[in-house]
Amino acid sequence: MSLRKKVAREAASLLYLRIEKEYKQAKLKAAKAFGIHFLPTNLQVAIELDNIAEENEGSTRRERLVRMRREALKVMQALKMYKSLLIGSVWRGTIHYDSDIDIVVYHDEPGDILEILRQNNLEIKQTEWAAVTKKGKRKRSFHVHAELPTKEKVEIKIVSDLELGKERCEIYGDEISGLSMQDLNALLRENPTQRFLPYSL
Image (cartoon, rainbow, N blue to C red):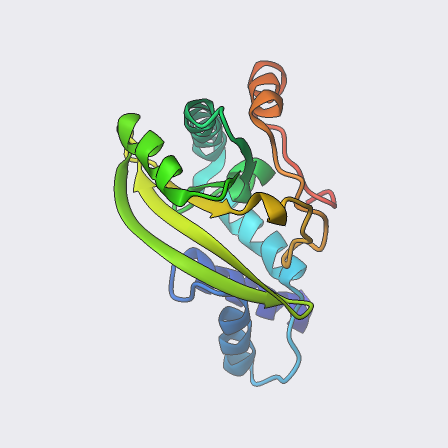
């Protein structure tokens, strides 16, 4: 195993065990542990994280993936008045034991979305505004952290219709296309464990 791969594996272990939450910090800590000054790419760490999850969780991981995709579909159906996309590890098919469901909703009034979520028995745990600056543009989004009746966790990111457009993934480097409600419904009928990755991992 190359030294870079060892560092990537260590960084992935830190993320998997929840010792670190962010890729950058995990990579820095792993590099320091090996006494080196170069870092693996996010993709290299993601590959190792995927491997660790598969080694530890096996077939139960795929069973949970299908359940989480079904739960995501229920949330998206409740929000059918608005454009929404399933993104994150549940879209990709790379979940692990601590993954949550990530959904982005395009709408200008977060209060409307919160009301629908409450009407559909989601327990709202936390809400917050977040802002990022990309290519000189500041983008704001409203985040809802909630728990489903099944105890699965879901994070719903609400962004303005004006922000509707594709973004590149900081981990895999590809376009975050996600799954619409219709696409997810078809996927669950035809190939519920399909993965969406730019490379064959």
